[in-house]
Length: 29
Image (cartoon, rainbow, N blue to C red):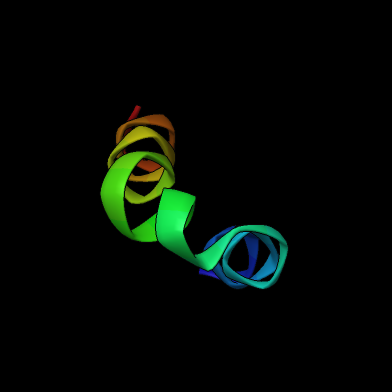
């Protein structure tokens, strides 16, 4: 979750649309 927060600070829009999915996949793997 910490990673998600960091990305959210950098690019909120990108996080909501793309990074969230990418980060979730990486965390799951």
